[in-house]
Amino acid sequence: MHEKIKEFIYSNKDFLLSVLDELVSIPSVKGEPVPGAPFGEMPKKALDKAAEICRREGFDTRICRDVVGTADLCPDGKAPALGILCHLDVVPAEGQEGWLTDPFRMIEKDGVLYGRGVIDDKGPLCAALLAMKCVKELNIPLKTGVRLVFGTDEENGSEDLEIYLADEKLPPNVFTPDASFPIINIEKGMMRSRFSGSFENGNIISFHGGSIPNAVPDKAECVIADILLSDIENAVLADKSGARFDIKTADGSVTVKCTGRSAHASTPESGINAVTALISLLCALPLKEGSQTDILRGLERTFPFGETDGTHTGLKASDEKSGALTLVFSIFNMENGSCTGCIDVRFPVCLTLAQVEAAERKALADAGCTFDGYMGDEPHITDENSDFVQKLLKVYERCEGEKGHCIAIGGGTYVHNVPGGVAFGAERGDTDYHMHGANEFITVDELLKDAVIYAEAIAEICGR
Image (cartoon, rainbow, N blue to C red; front, side, top):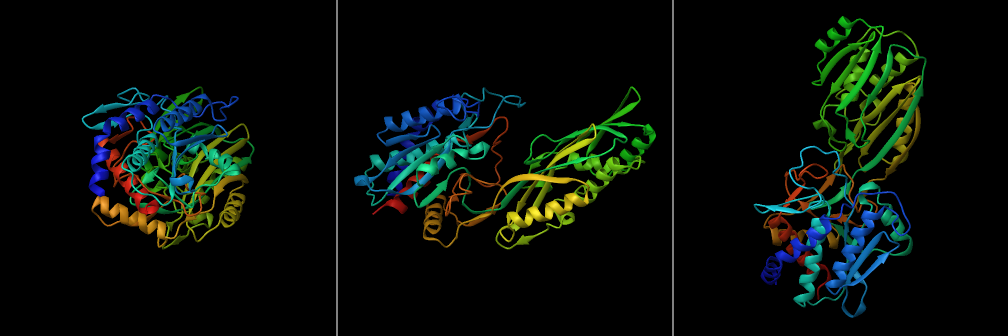
């Protein structure tokens, strides 16, 4: 059966590329809600187009509450036992430097596909659709059905799934092709918290650093008054952070710009945090004593430059299954007697949101700030010995010719709040597909291989 599936998939390459081109051409970035389009007109347009394609291929297709679509392949009307959960929404391309092609036009060059969504997640969605087409047209016998589920808000919190699940149920076995092979069965918990503080003004006129809550900030800037330029220059010369500092003087003040290196919040050790580097530099200066300086020193004590494991917040933790906790001080603004900031924590399965919150509250209070709330999720874990996971591993090994295994990650996938769900593809190895960046890509051959794997998974899980 494997060779028949592979032959069908590869002979339908043009179908795969055609439907992907249709979807990539829709800039399905979240927009303002309008009647009939809770996440904006473009995500809804992509949803309607995906549903149209699925109907065209003969699948039983529905759109639920204008946010999620489903396409069923179910023998004799039986309930689906497998769900393949994908998303049509994408992150913005506007303002990103380096695009060599129109991000909302799929371009193939030397066997490589470029365009926003080709890897995240429109390409894998099309591979899953081709897999279902393969099973249907080869008449592979099924004892239970499969449902393709395509949402429109994964990139901004998965509210689409919350809306869908208020009325519907997902099948008992769900995978998302929205991450990496072989299988991701553990996702750390996440807490993204906000804090604030107030103070009497001191030497720092303003401080602005970071803009994305779930990334190591690569830029920070402050304006300093009543400090000798030579003191600032000496502090820069003594700095060992690896960040770059640029100094300018104007109107009796000094502006210091700090440039670090960005990294995802789940892997902060690969970045250089411009916010904590600049705070550290400021604390090396002869600042006026007072509440502003107390806050800066408190934040440096609590979130010292180079520390990414939460030691000084009392959060350092690790376990064998999911690894070590990571913490990023990602956004900080200080001006006119008040400051605000954001902290991103990815925590292992041995901790809970309540424990992380309690530790952060205390640490921020000790730094002279107030914990203002958070958004977050408990860790997600699916038993690697479950029948579902073992069948997916069996399929992976048969198709890829290598041993499959389960992995844990610090990021979150579309199945984070789906009991028993796992991520199954579509990234391979250490390849940087420029996901969320300029020139996002995937190879044609990889997408075809994905379709083969997903067709085999349907046959393995739903077949007679």
